[in-house]
Length: 269
Image (tube, rainbow, N blue to C red; front, side, top):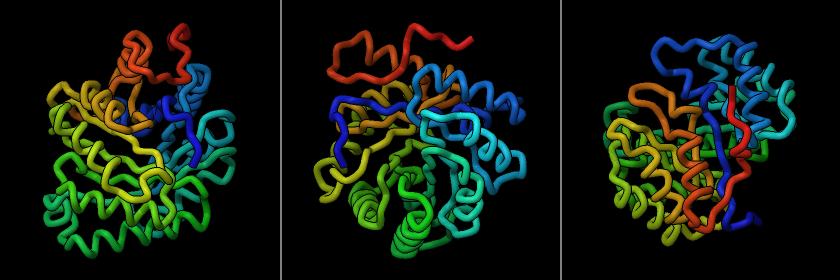
């Protein structure tokens, strides 16, 4: 995959993860209005929803796919065929569709959320990517709770899903647990130890439970990540997500050698 090594892709999940902030329920028409503003702002990817979760979410992805031309439209799924089928159906009008599928990577999630084993989880993750790839070329894989995952197992998982066809690999700090040096080191380890990592973009998705989402995202970029998952004003469940404007302006004001396609003069009303 040929990418400008200094370009940082902005993946906006205001309409999916951001909507999980308490008291926020957006209608489809409100989502379309926001998506059009995000397009003007210059975001690269818009995560439009989690299609299988509700008819409203499904419909929002369908309508956003029709309304937005430039950004990639992304639909979230879990690692199963029913979720992926719903996502494929919801994205059929998208000019540039992406399926975002994944599964837990930490032993805590594997044991208590999935009641499973590392081997089984690895198989399920790979199978989901292979299945999604039959319908859509652009597949992002999330390794849920990667922030607390064993780094050697995480590297094994990432290598396997890239081999299965993942074009983006998302390394989320799902619980906002990591310190910036820990998170940066985790991204660096993947960059240096996953043999096929040059075939995918590493993405960071950080939560703000300890107030470190932006710091962790920047640490991720400095260690090899090239996509940042964020929301407008950092909204999201619990303490929120990484703030889009903080990341965009840190990269603009500090000459770190990276750039985004965000039009910083265009503030969203």
